[in-house]
Image 1 (spheres, rainbow, N blue to C red):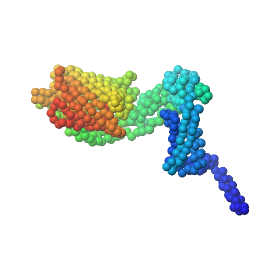
Image 2: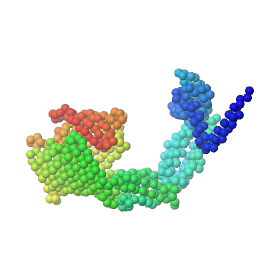
Image 3: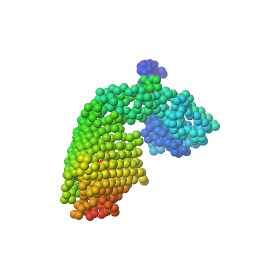
Length: 595
């Protein structure tokens, strides 16, 4: 008997199909995909791959990871999944050069879920028999292109890896754009594979086109004088284009503190006459910043700190900082005025004044300093500082008072290198300073002094080995005629940690520490990461301040724990002193980078 509803059902289905086809194809495709997803949802079904190991196995499992099959899937969905798995496995094998593989698939239900076994005989791989990779045009002699090609892994005799081929193409394209070859294009890019002879011939030819140069930079800003803004740019008009110089210039502008928003753009679409125009848009940052803080330092005890900073006093970028520090051991009030010069990244002038009151276990001092420092980053990477400072100091030490007045010229050189900014494992730093004064030329005493600080870091056994050496020497007739702040003392967080701050050095007849002509302090440390940003370490310090050789060497050793916090490295050390009776351990807290 004929179903009376069959014609109605056909009419309803035809009407539904007509309405669905009124929608766009993407919507139809999405609806179709949604209908298939329930059948391919893969929650607990397991694939096992046998017969291959290493990168080949990892690549196959990576391809199969996109395949989904639910434990409750019916038989027809399992058959469809096996077809897809076969195709994905074949593609994964061919991507690494295996074109004549034999695959065996089997499946069964185990623990109420599907388990699919794939047994693979990969067979012999296809090897590269010819590799023609070249850059033609003006960029053919660029060493960067040659380095990328030489490190591609696509050498004659190697197993074909299509991933390396794709990576080489992308690296060449990226490097060409980074170095200003904006017209670069591949004129030939093929891989001819013969599975039966197991051979592959690679041809990859890039026409570099000309290397563009930096064109004019158009400024869109009203924050600073144009000459000062351009001083932060590390490129010049007419120089060969480099994306790295663009990034470094933008970072320098951001780090200056003058701007809230920095947009430095290469207008590649507007390139002409082998030049790329540049556009720089700047938005001013807040000029003022007030910083207040309180803390504890084992050298100076509990302390309160405050800073008022004006980053942009005028359009020529002058700035000033008013700072204060209050503590039982050391209190000070300072004012610093910074003037950027023609090349502000490498050349600036600091004018400063500072009043400091210090009360340590060895002396009481009141110091007023006025002076200036001209800082210049040399082309070889060294930072040079030329200074002139006026010092007026009253000190009371070992029952004697001294009032000194000096005009002190000085010069210093420093440099720091490390493999990374946060938690470096390899690096070094050097800081050398020479200063002096002449009696009768504003000064009450003649002297010359040199300071040398050497630091080094090297990876060892999964951690870091750190060494530090500080040497100093003073030429002066009578050391007690020199202001207390220019004499050498040691002891404290950054010298010999088992002893109190500035508690070591030459003494007078009563045993009071009066400071010395010379300084020799060294330290050796080893630290290792515990977990995350936390680490532990052990250390050994030794040295002293002295007036003649031989001298008494003070030693301390201990254990430390550190944390690389968002505000910088913080370390707590427990140090045991060996030469002087006192507490068995001394606690010290230090903040800041080792280098």
